Length: 140
Image (cartoon, rainbow, N blue to C red; front, side, top):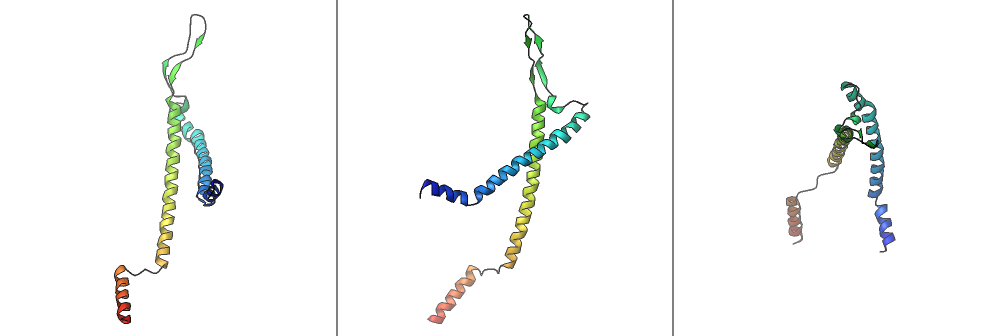
C-alpha cells in the first residue's frame, strides 16, 4: 500500500475530521471565553480593586530612570497581572469543557443503557455449555 493511499485511508476514517472540527470549535470557544474574561470578569475585579486594570498589575524591581547621558532606562518589573488574567481564562475554559464532557458522558451513558435494555441478554457460558452437552446427547 502506497503512502498516498494510506494517507487517504487515514483521513477517510472520520476521526481526523472530528479532531479538526474539535480544534476549530475549541479555538473559537477560547476566543469567546477570553472576551468574557477581558470584557466582563476582569473589569469587575478591577473595579473592586480601585479601578486598576488587572493586566497592569506588576511588581517593579527597578523603576524607569534617566542615565547621566540623558538616555531613558526602562523599568524592570514582574508583570503578574497578565499571568493572573491568563490563569482565569484557563480555569474558565477548563470548567466549561468539564461541564460539556460531563453532559456528553451522561447522554452517552443513557443511550448505552437504552441500547442495552433493547437488546436481549445473551446466555451465560454455563447455559451455552449445557446446550452443547444437550445437543451432543441428542446426536449420540
